[in-house]
Length: 269
Ligand SMILES: [Zn+2]
Image 1 (cartoon, rainbow, N blue to C red):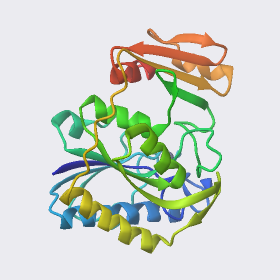
Image 2: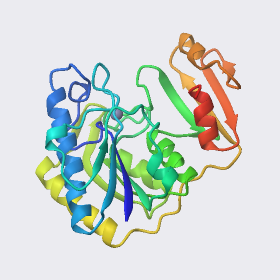
Image 3: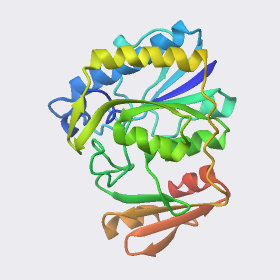
Image 4: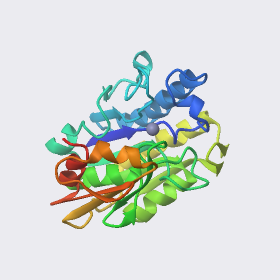
């Protein structure tokens, strides 16, 4: 079984504050250690169940020198390959070549969710809201739509309770979820001890590979319209290229034949 594992930082067990997930901040080394150990536990479980083709992609933009390279190389578990330093959503080779499923570890709720720990969509400073075909969506739906473009289902999502609920709402009840903490606010949560989470993660990985849940790929209706509501008018100009249109002072919109097409145009790719 071939799996693509996307790992973000904000939904990792024990992470509740930006200081743990931004390069150069006081607790950043702790955050990346927790992120590495959590993904390792998934790899151990999947490997034990016989999965031989695991690609882990570091998806967290920590800023500074660490964007998309937060996982600590010397600690990484054997049995997987690890993609470090690739710009967010740009590495899609396993999807293009064909894989059996995707897993999202350490994901977070979309912008505006009050009890979503470190909730945001793409950029906490710049993006106020994001919509796919008029529906408010976060990074879980964005990444799932990229997988869905290649008919790859998302089998499992982990993060806080709000992220797990968002995953079920967007992808359907059959997606497996593991809630590693329950947010009290955007920077506080009731947490399970990471060691306990790692045991559960390993067990769930084993189950996912042994008996994959039947989840339909997430494919938004086509043509697909993406709308970004920015926090300030000056951020609009970054998107005014090609067929991207300005809807109002701080909102841009693009329609593509499908999600991937629209997503690429939005980023000028
Ligand atoms: Zn992140």
